[in-house]
Length: 229
Image (cartoon, rainbow, N blue to C red):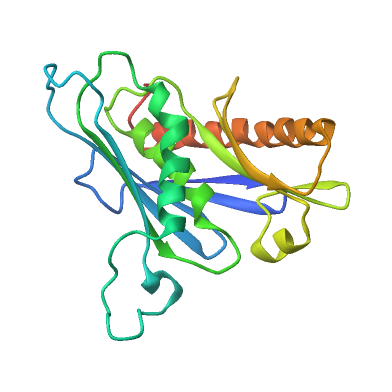
């Protein structure tokens, strides 16, 4: 696999996808950057075991304190069980991708997300969702459709793509939309008494950018020298 980098312009933001430098022993690995926030997501599959009878997909997401230039204080310096935020983000990553593995595929698959750097403005959760799809698409693991995710905010009557933490304080909407090129697969979010019409507009607004991110993921695979999947 060749080291490659793709930039995706999303309004005033530039999303950067990279592969081929980190986690080379994983079946698929992707680094996703937005501002100074950086996440690494890897995908690995185990051997076939048809006697298992179920699909053992494991998704684990961790935010290490070193990503923010800190270390745990107090008596216990180690980072133990995942926080509530880490558990919920693991579920956000899991839900859009789990239905897109083929029926009868029983290999163990592990998708691991780690925050390498956090700028305290751009949330790494959506970046990790994008990275999971990219890592699976770069790997030989059977994954039927490329997915992507986007966060949508709303200040006044203007919809905003990938709002920062400071923008979300003013926003009456915090919506995460995940989907394929032609369908929405998951919606998660909070709103302050928005109408159904405004919510639908936000979902369709987000889906336009999902298609752009999917284009970038597919371009990353081509530039890595892996051809079509």
